[in-house]
Length: 375
Image 1: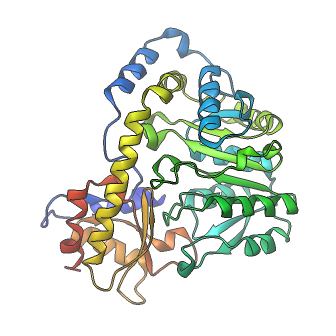
Image 2: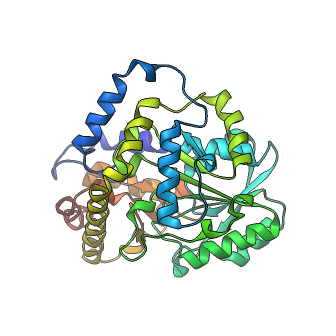
């Protein structure tokens, strides 16, 4: 069974003795979309012209708007021709994997890793070479370790920053080093930046990789509108890559979905600039929830907050050699708290749990010490 439905099934066995269920399992925005965006979505959905097929690469207005935003955020030559719109970021990774590697090839990933990336590669018959991450080093990949793995012939190194599941934010210098390693090995750096709009204050510019005029030779960036605009149900993501690679992705998408949903593309294109203030307020709110989680975990002896950032925290539980699956299931049934087992994210992660804390407000997060101390 896919991990999220399995864990949510545990929650249905909670009897409510301690109050309502606290769901920290899936990365879902804990607040609704703005009314202005909902109105734009309604207008676009009512347009009969948008009921037909659209351009495979995405609506021109959204591709141009996203390229403009990326030039403002990152600097560097990003144009509409570099953008391919997808039905969510999972689909962006799926299409990118097909475009950059074939059946029997290998792609390098971190351990722990985002499980949907891992299972996507399994579906495609693409092998995985792992780069183990050290908790003492903040779960940051060592470029030398990545270099050793790519030396074995992997076609790409897939990274997520801010990270899922650990929340770790990869510094700009580290990302530059990782791209340099990929260049040296003739591999792609596939950089998933789904959570880039929730970086800490002072880090709003994640990196300067797009400053390089030939960035498209080795870099593919993935992005999602789901979290930033609170519309995961509308399935909208994007790929930034060289025009030749965008052309290869278009071949994949023509067989996969033809085009991403059209009404949300039109609605989001007009909202990218208009909702800047609303998005910034949400970033500050997520930062406040980060502080609330740090305070809550500090009140739980034996629990260790190993890494935190953006939407996620990776927490070491205090139950010795108990499997993370067992601990998470008991948390759901006995404490009414849903989290994901660390074992879902890679080998050797049984001592950890992933908290998707952005789903809950600070008041709800403050309930965690009392709930978890009862286990």
